[in-house]
Length: 173
Length: 398
Image (cartoon, rainbow over all chains, first blue to last red; front, side):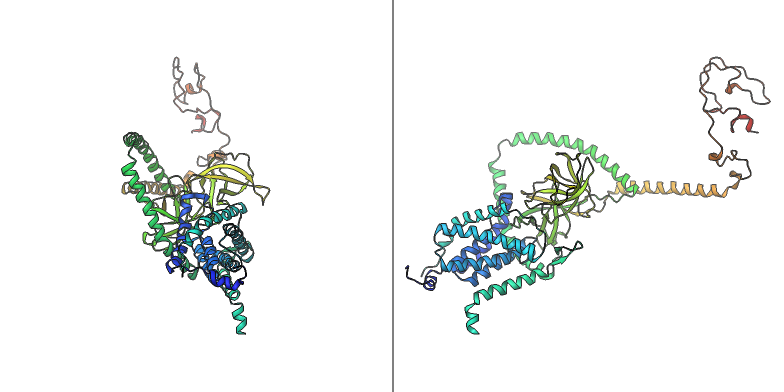
């Protein structure tokens, strides 16, 4: 296994899921992301659509699919908020692309790597979000990095629980 | 050439998607008067369509989850959590009795106030129609304090309607969809409402900060602002009626951008993080009952007739030249008392009147009157008897 090239590993370890999982899991992530803050109040420090984007991008190992899923989920998140349509879309497109690109090269089954990847990609998503708002759009936006840090930690913890659950829906040949 | 697209297709797809979104963003931003950029609060047709799709996708499951939660809560409340119900019922009955008494007195005051304000022509805005709505979801984004309610266009909602609870104001309607609507909470940093501190009457702009804390900005430094002071709506924003509770002052911090200004942190009266039911103010036009309207009409007609009488008397006074004798010497024109010199000094009532007292002075040509014994009352010729040398004295009335 150690002698396999990157392409061979990619061919071997692409995860496949039923279509219903591709449809329902992103939808549920959007619904829960919109509903759970009502229960948890200001302590809703997570971004479920981002976690789902990272999961499918890492599993599918396809940058195009990761980009498209990130863009779709981000745009829907923007539509549910009062932000301009595309701010989250750009951030999650980049994250989906990067996660899939990283997934080709490293072993993403490792829990520590999953934890670390979710943490770093969450912070990257926040940074791109802020960059788009302040630099590309030139719109003033107050920002609290501490909350973004909490969100990154929350995403990592959720990923630890959610990834094994979603792994159960994989289709095996 | 083909190999270039095949080799870099992943990157090209990413760039194409980013480019499309950046172009989409560019049309949603506009330059404001201050020279900076701001998001256009009025969504274009394309943006509104995307928001409509997202709402249509997410709202039904949210509504389902919300209804399920309500159903479980109803089941629990009505079948399992019946302990202490009798005691609660007794307490509530006592509260109702007390509130009825309070309501009777308040109603009378309110009616009187409304009549008076209508008479004075105030344009004070009152809440006359509200629509209850359930909160079924939120934006799910810490940077966006937006929530979704289960009422929309079909219930008559429109953008910019104020949303309140019994405790205080909550936000305003932003986007209205067929069966739901998005409400921008007052603690969002793009929100804005006029606020006034109840005691010090200091005004400012109410908005949220990055942490979702409510604050009043644009306030000059003032030591009178103390924690615990109530904050009310100022009413100048054409959204919230004046005088609705916003919260209480939590603390005062220095404005990092302006040395002369402070930021008044406000503890919101409404539980903005845990909203279940809200009221949308659908009408602020005055609507009086038939009896109240009749009273107002009667009072208005009375006021108008009094005003007409006053005008008529003024016109008559202008047309009566005899009252204003221009040939009379200065100080003797009865129509112009201001020109009659200084007023006569007022004499104190005489304790022991005699024949020299002004009230006992005999009129010319008449027999001297006998002195009334022990007369402490003021003379009947007037409360302020004039001296002989005064313009209104007996010697002048020839």
